[in-house]
Length: 384
Image 1 (cartoon, rainbow, N blue to C red):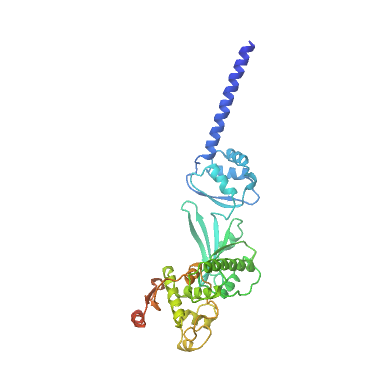
Image 2: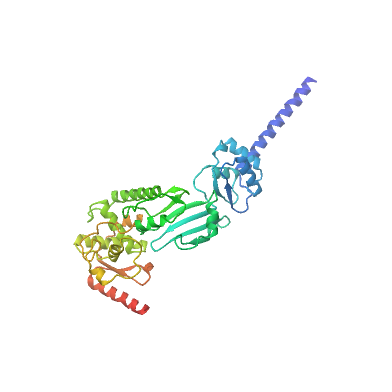
């Protein structure tokens, strides 16, 4: 009898172990395998929430079949206490393991509402947009001038949302005065700041938080530009007619203002380098314009003959060599072009058409250049 009971107990134990092992394998497959989500979603993780609440939300949105299993898996991986607030894009078919990684690894929100403060050469704007999880594209909800237009209601709404992402996007070629002026219009930033030296701000996109200090943001821009310049200068070509990183920045700013075509930067740089080497004046309009405006906005008209004839530190038709300071904040590509120009014998260039995007026509001799200028003048007359 006891032998029979022991045999039954052993059989029951074997079955129980087998079932437990099968359940564990099933749970592992469910946790790591593709999930039931048919379309990507934007998952909001509120500040102060917990993994149990997040798992329930995921279950309600059809992202996981077994919310409890996600919570147990996160606990087993020691990630329960690593939950990060924000809005996260959960892709189609994401496994529970992938979802746990998404909501615990931190970093900027990957979906939801985004406010971009764009500081451009000619104007500034505030753009409110929201990611459509189904397409993975941002859809614009509002766009306005922070200085002149009425603030739309949607902007006031999204500013109050905890998961809204804020960025300042600085265009290549803006002046330091423009940057400070436009940052002063942003109601999410605080504090005052002096206009920094021209050329010391790196054009880029900067993540900000509401209430951040303007001076702190300017400091980040300056640190980024210093790093870019230091790297470019360390990798500069030999025998350049510029002696210091500061002179490289001046040249880079001129290149930045002279061409809107990325592929032309090194070629434009070669023209100015050739002129400096041969002692030929740079004769570039953007420096003259900077001398007229002092970098405070765009000129908005053509240069007058009296302005071209006036001798100022920035009139490269009247002075030899480089102007005393940069004339804008150049981007990385222009800085790198300034210290690694193309190898040409070209000394001249003029716009190819009335559209800046069409670039320039280059020439080695004055005769060739005069022909190119005449062709451009014909285009001007035809357009009028």
